[in-house]
Image 1 (cartoon, protein in one colour):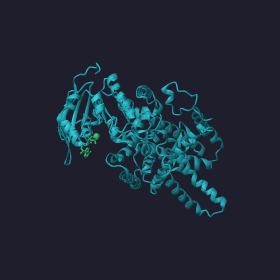
Image 2 (tube, rainbow over the protein chains, first blue to last red):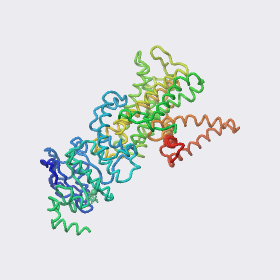
Image 3 (tube, rainbow over the protein chains, first blue to last red):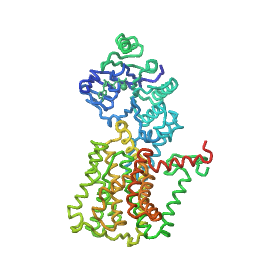
Image 4 (cartoon, rainbow over the protein chains, first blue to last red):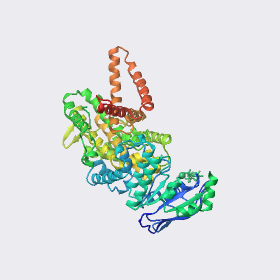
Length: 260
Length: 352
Ligand SMILES: Nc1ncnc2c1ncn2[C@@H]1O[C@H](COP(=O)(O)OP(=O)(O)OP(=O)(O)O)[C@@H](O)[C@H]1O
Ligand SMILES: [Mg+2]
């Protein structure tokens, strides 16, 4: 593995239970995430992986348990607070702003850095204009980093699937997050696109030190790039540890064999 | 080959995010402004000013207002005329009740009142959307007009409810003739259009579009949904309010609740649909189209010798057909057709 240093625990979820009516999406889940690590969540379809991410950044509110982020313990996160605390994410089903260009989509990722009011923006004056240019500069760096130069001005609705996924990553990176939650960033991609995406995820982790929580179905990818892996099945945690440990865990093997 | 951006390399982000990044567009806009401010006032007749140009500009402003709310922020509204009425009556009362109130300040305050009413009636949008929101804005429409008719204070106890608008005087200069009024309206509309353009290319505009396109994602990246929607209602209503005041002061010459009925709201909605949802240029194209349509049709009817009564029916039919056409075939309206034309022109005469 690379020599990047994995730090202290920055996110901890304890005894999280989440129900939708009678459906138990998550039951008594606990795990932690360390600074700068790549932490994967795997499990068969419907295991509760996406629900877990939604709990971490406050889209879903668990009935039981706590989320501790940067030492602050709370019952649930609030989406806005999560964003302000530096948690960014991508979605399993692409959630781009379909009526806007690639550039504008990525620019939205910087909204929390904006201090000027809408009146200043209407007048395109002083601070508003400076902020716009400064954010544009940062966004252009991200565009270069993710190699999106050629589609900069294209409306996202016209892009192929693989590029859309990349734009969504760019939008999340524009916030300069401390922690990035990626929900199946490589799903539905061909081998080449997967390799690109893998590289981008690793580079992000490497260059910016971003902590990454990743959901992925492709075992090869998961085992390759993760520092530690959590395995969920039917809303319960059945495994947690380094890739090799998890791979040889009999419960995990059973869950995967059972699901196939 | 005339209309090309080749060779125009952007050397800074500042240049690249200009309102009109392509030089030809910039020249065209400067030319258009020169025509509007210099050539037109020299040539147009009073009829053209008061029957075509002034209503066109005022409706364009109101359409811009509705487009901000519906096109950019994705919130349906059938209450446009109500916000215009608030702007008109508020301006009237500010001028009536405050000694020495400057006209322009009264217009701005009228817009601010409309914005406040907009925020109040925008509150339901936090809970409901689409058809139900449209129905609730329809209630706004009826409630506001009813209020203005029933509460005599608003109309200064006038028995008929129709009040003559005060004279417009700015820094000692009186705006009496259609030509002078046209210039006043043009200046206000040009400035407000520029401000709208600035908003939609900044964070506030992107927040509207983000909430329109995917509100969960917008929230996750840090936009506050409530604030975003209410800002859209406020800005939109401000534009409508100023348009309403101009409608009373520069077009009708009277301030009356009935001038702001549901018909007007629908008319402005049609302008948005035909011109182009979510386009500033489209707001102008839509307004021009709908203001000109009856004029053009009546000329046609006149020359073909058809009875005059045909005009209004023909107008309705053409309207209906066009709206269906745009809704089904080209939801982005005339503005999109214009853009397609430009893209073609960019390649012309070598289409491949
Ligand atoms: N908003 C919701 N309302 C009701 N049920 C939900 C909701 N979100 C998730 N669920 C249910 O919770 C369970 C876990 O779903 P989740 O989407 O978290 O699974 P997943 O592990 O991400 O699956 P996949 O691999 O298919 O993405 C499923 O049974 C799902 O139907
Ligand atoms: Mg999922």
